[in-house]
Image (cartoon, rainbow, N blue to C red):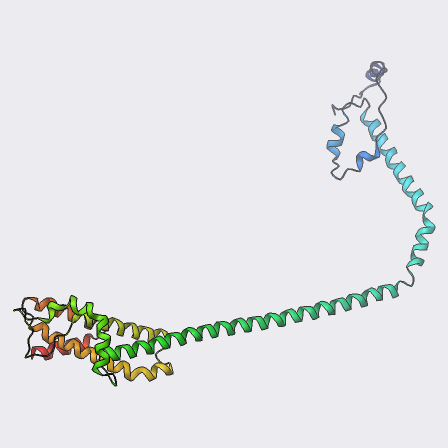
Length: 293
């Protein structure tokens, strides 16, 4: 090694003794140097580069340090031998204390388990109440939807003069639809601009489209709620009457479109689109066949 200066022969050794006679004597190795948690032999040896001693002297010093530590350990054991022997006697009778600790731990475990059971019970109750709240909220939403459905069916029956609703009720409701009648006024005149007194009243396509939109909304609302709901089953006769009334008006509008002159094709297509919107393509085909005949 190059870290330490040591000779290979007597002649060189004598020369080295002459050369190093004035160098300081190396300090003894410190035991504290070996107590570091990250002690590394190579790193420790590299830190001894300034020690002017041979490798053999360093080994001898390490052996002496090892022997010193062994003697100190032996002396320590001998000095405290009686204490070591009395330690076993001091532990006698400790079974009672251990049992007390074990009993205390068991009682603590039971208390913890009891608290855990209560928490789990409360959690289950909370989940049940939460599910009940969700169910009640869903039932309330369905109830509001059913009431809305019933109100809309009754309103359409009035406007279409179905069932027990007479013409006076329909006339009162028709005031709110005056915009449909006014915007569709030209559809209710013949080519000369005069009303045809010898034919049935012309069907307003805008008002009919308005009614059909409401009817389709009812069918979709019924599908969302569930067509087999008892309340909706009770409303089926009314819905069937509304459907029949709308199909009758569509048939009349188709017949009148045939006599619309230049606007015949446009009015016919408009009526057919209403058939399609209602999902009554089959009824439209049947009406067209009867119209052709």
